[in-house]
Length: 324
Image (cartoon, rainbow, N blue to C red; front, side, top):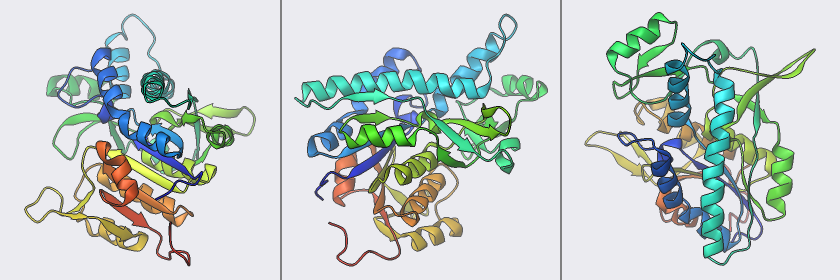
């Protein structure tokens, strides 16, 4: 597939930079960040115009824990501020690692991080009802203490006790116009970090923050619409979408239409976990005008674009002449 000046939004999970079961030291996270840049460098060398969206689930959970540990001495920071903070320092890690990798490859492409706000509906039920797991597993004793303080702690799909926080659906990316301008001139933009900082519009005050997190894949799909991207590339820790995931009958689905993806999602055949939001984001992207969405393993990004790896989701109706 020739890029022909087209744009791709690349979504990278926070777990790729801070895997479970490993120390979340800055050195380790920088190491994983550097290791994650090869597919983006390859896309840049091919001529794609690129926006990068990253997750922050492990990192913002760690920041919450740091704030809670220090609560007897310092005022705790609200969740929205922690989303902004992680978007800044994760963006810095990606920006530095990617710029170094591009320079080493002989590319003159520039990289910039843009702190981005995600507008949400203040009446979205998810603003008040915690629905998204963040952070790492919590020991039962600590979990009980946090529950007594009014913090929502529940078991996730793997049985780990974790924090659960509000996660409203984004309706607009506040700085998408700037992202579009930068991407169009060839700069690689890291935007909507952690899904973007959730905000709503108050009739008197203007934009105001919300203590919540936004799903980064849904934010990436929305950003793709708003900057006119052709492709949404979701890079994760598995090599695609599997029907009957974690069973003996697991089967990789290499290609499906939006309707087929919706039916698979509704059937429950994907199992519980993080793949559901990725498939939902892929459907949202192609139904909103995107050419295709690809869900692939981190190291298989270019192969996913070429259609030789991962799972590709396409619109129900492909334009006459097809995709190039």
